[in-house]
Image (cartoon, rainbow, N blue to C red; front, side, top):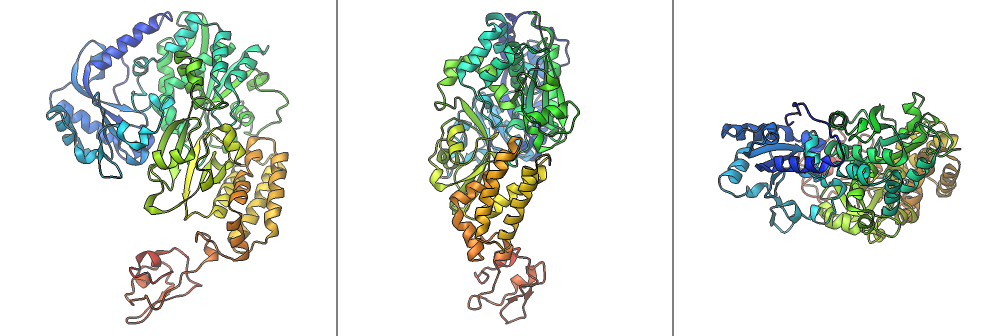
Length: 633
């Protein structure tokens, strides 16, 4: 990573000083004429981006260029430098490198590519053609804006991810960081702050979609002291990595949002509840908090205004149910992470029985943007009841996977086919699961539906925290529902009989259907059971747990009936419901299936047609894959 701040910093003594700090830091970074910005998000690091970063620094130094970042802040100037950043979003194409200010966007960069990148940039003023993104028509995109994956997005919350070094607060200062907090402390009363957030229409991005401003208003009016601000970073949905990436890429935006919230409601203490299994996010969060304290932005007498607020980090042990508000608070208090009945709102009696505001990472990251640009600007985006943008993790059977941000109201078709590039290998789209394990599966006839809180709920799914899993025709929706019910059953705290035993009963029925032992009356039983679980469960895990079953029964009932009546899995996923057989007329007696079978289920002799012994076959499909003549079906 880049050299850490080692010089003694002078705390910001007044809100008015933030404008000068911005100009100072912006000017310093601009003294680096060329910057090779390397993605250091989790996915790119796994692909070797830090090795690329080190090689870039080494190659630049070999040219006699000083890459010490402190040189810039001391008034120096350098021809070129290398810097890390948070997640650029296009995870599957990593490691990613962007050359600034030209904007040249390189993907799948390896250490061996570094000399060519530096030579093309510093000597030839050109680009390395083969490292540019290749569009489906064979043309090359020079900048991110020319890549369809980015062109269809509106990156506002993610604006700092991929453009600044998340481990140096001065990078955040250079892009309006803490200007919103200074504005609040200088020009706005706490009531003004709450009203601005209310006016913006910001709804909680953690899944519930409750208006953030109304929540803050309730906490501000609450009588108890002290008051608390909690940031929920306990993101545990399969396929979801939005909040983790935001903390990795721009932790200061989340911290600033929490401080503004604390000012608005009168809180002095904050907690970030983050999963311990996200080590990079945790490390950068601790660094960001320490640097904010160094600059007088956290702690006592913030910016010399007499306003006190500080943040602690609580690392959760990875229980999915601890993402639920009351279970999360219980975990912080040292109690078992179980939900409790909500006789009182958390804004009246939350953490330690005191007024508490709990929002998720993305919600807080929106707040500085709203204060800087204005509630009217923010409310101009989105739909009537869902304002602004939403960050999604786009994964599954799709050409372009990664982290995206789109305006509320963008259709599923635009997200999946324009930004996501559609379904690979010429296969057909089948369904998209939104909202994580508690969400629903939506079919092709919902592709033109605008994505917002209300539309998704009406369709039988939910926004959730923002996971979006795309499935092609090779997916079995019965097996998908079984997977998510199994996940919820494993993660249930067990406190509610409806959730604990109800999910187990659902799982038992789905298991039988996938085994070919289902009965038609099982479908009605599952529907009744789902409604009982929803009605009787205490927390959101239980009340939304039935969604995968109810949505697949609503939109894909024929597939359930095929499993039950025809003993057939149309997608050929449920192994007990299909067999592999050799087509005698097509078999060339080559023995490839025999030599590659891992379970010795193929009988074959030279000049004889192969035969598959069903009792030994493990349904792995290797025989079909290796056969060059279409002789295995």
